Length: 314
Image (cartoon, rainbow, N blue to C red; front, side):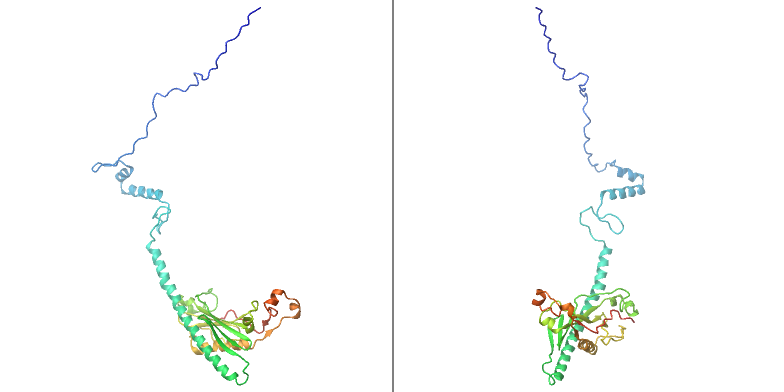
């Protein structure tokens, strides 16, 4: 029998000599150490020094470029950066002046206007009390059931109740202005002083007295008149046509007790001469339980004859 010949197993070559990377004979260059600052007396060979040698113009250009690259934060009015992003910066003097001038001119003017409006409202309150006393003295002997009373709500609101009507006078706490084409704004009197463009205002509303008494929250009220007061203590009156509106030249209209009495009397006349009109029957054929519980059966009643003139022209 022939002998079986077994082949010797050949170990696989793991690496071919060709694929083995050569061992570097030299190490990579090390990171150069940081340059020490030049000693006193020895000139530094920096780019800034070289640029100085090149002349002052090139040095200024290089410094400007360096500043623009180094800073990306807020800028001053001359477009030069003042601080890095996120860091606090000192406000330029011109902005502080703008704030100061705004506070000095506009804010002080508004404070003066508010004081004038508050004084006018106190005058209106006083003449209303006197008017109520005078009317009560005349009406009580004829019919004591007709109630005319004055009620102070707070320092910015008071009411006058007479018969079934209620006049509500409200002082607004803010100073306002208007578009250039509204009311007194186009007049030469207002254009002569920018402070005359701002006004305090007092509103007079007419409600049904029972709306407040029974808290019928959906009952309407009507703006009867609005009194605008400026820094010179002059007024502009606008409202329903039943008001005895004066000549709306603010330069001649100064706040006086006589004028305030005329305002209250005109508002009361407008309220008395305009009766409550009940809604048509089809509109009240059904009501909700909420309306019943809140006494809203006549909530859609409206006054007749109120024609509001929103803009008084000169």
